[in-house]
Image 1 (spheres, helix red, strand yellow):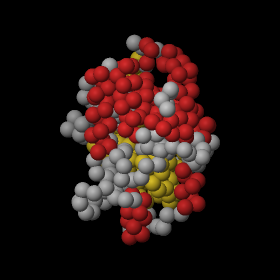
Image 2 (image 1 turned 180 degrees about the vertical axis):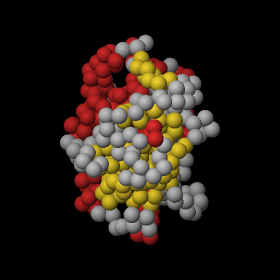
Image 3 (image 1 turned 90 degrees about the vertical axis):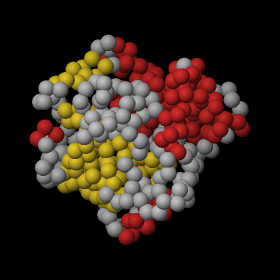
Length: 348
């Protein structure tokens, strides 16, 4: 397989490996297969959810958004991570969108993942997007597998609409389809991962950790990043909240909500792989380094501003520097797939 190899200043060697054996083959797969498929998934979601318009294929259910956040880079950031907007002591405006992973509204008490999308605006007015989910690794190994899974659990095919609108039926039908494409063992691994990651109690989106799950290049350094909350969860009854939005509104009326922005450095292909998104970069192998802080100030959420943010076309390829770029097939596919999704729904 063709790869793209880089060595950082510490002498650590890492590489990207392309689907289909070459960058050209992978690009063709993304353009001809993945991009049209994401649009079909969006159309099927609209029909199943009885939605009035096309929505995102993932993370379509916004919990809350704000355009008043700040992204503050620490003064003692390591020299080799001083890339693009990551300059010591710099502060930037930021917009934040918090969401449920499902694109079909099903209520905050439903089993689901949560997402955080952060758009930082640099001194030149250029957008830099960070996309994260509250699970440290993915259920899909690569972009090809991700598209197979997404299509299997959403595409209606010849199944009657009255059955397809039942979540349990979609789950069973999706598992059968995944098993046919990827094998029963892999299908069961995927199902277990999704079940484990979506079954955990989420008491507040302000107290969740959010991971990039896929790696990024800070110059020659390969990293993953995450948001680590400074707030602590309150309660502990074991009950899922009726409204994550209401809980966040109450928090923001009382004070700021803050997260540390942390990165993990690539160690080696076994413990911190670039391409296999199902492998967690464990903290004992790749310690977290805090390099910035996200601050959502005390406020009353502005619904008109939230409406604008909900229409944003977040994309990890929206970056403020040529020295910063997404890595791995999961990220490489996002560039065109997310653009195709945004174009269909009219995102900005």
